[in-house]
Image (cartoon, rainbow, N blue to C red; front, side, top):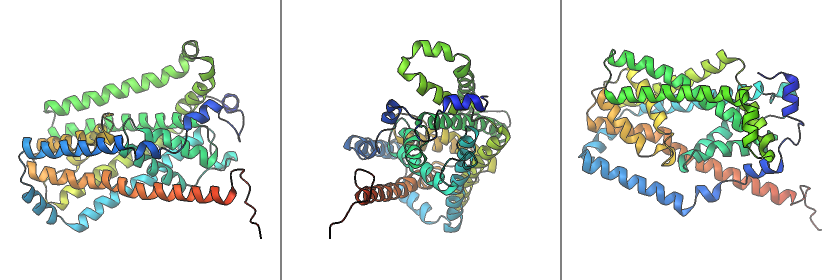
Length: 368
């Protein structure tokens, strides 16, 4: 971990910390990519394929599915919604702790957003992840924080990498424990493969994190000189953010427990016999599937995977489909709708601010 002197070297000033290249990397809002015809067409095509899989491969009776949906308990579904959305403030608090660890906190004299402001930034980034491939929302999060508080784009990306690694390691550990409880050591092949994949990714992530600083000089020999400062900031954000590790792990674990509780409440809403441990395992595995970079937020892969995993728990195909659709309504479609509203609101607010201040950043003079 770097001391304060190292941090000062990496972060030379508090007002202008990003190079022109880094500022260009942050780029403008991603509206053109989010709402491009190509992106919208990919989402619609994925939904069509998903519908055909459910209808032709699984042979679902959609009338029965609709009947089951209508019979779901509104109260328990509302609890599921509340459980899932209560994880966002916790994740924002964890992100705040990561930023404080690398010297971006109000105690350091930085004009950082409040916990609510960080929650809004994170939620908007999740929306972008839900409607684009390759998790572009993570980069957009860096852009939003840089615009709001002048935080280095590369350092923010580093904290996001640290956050992803924390999630992966905690997820793999909890999923491993849950799988052993649910299946009593006799694992289905698919469950074993998912568990092994999670463990392998965790090991790769940890090794990669340790290598960032240990082999910095070797990486700098490979990278163009103009990227050395960017890499130093990225490394600073990724490596030095792992202070106060017990707090970070605790916040990560509670966040995943809330997501498992959301799936458990969703299953209970339709009367499905899913245990707490089983719901946690399916929720964690579904989150892993959302990282598939082929479709936005793993759309299609996640739904099919959830139906298969719920089948391992003894849930029939129709009920498993209903649970999946309701859960994805919470953790995907609600983010698409509400995130779109938040995105448009922020865009309109920015345009009004520019109109009021003018291009120079000074208030416009209105002729009498």
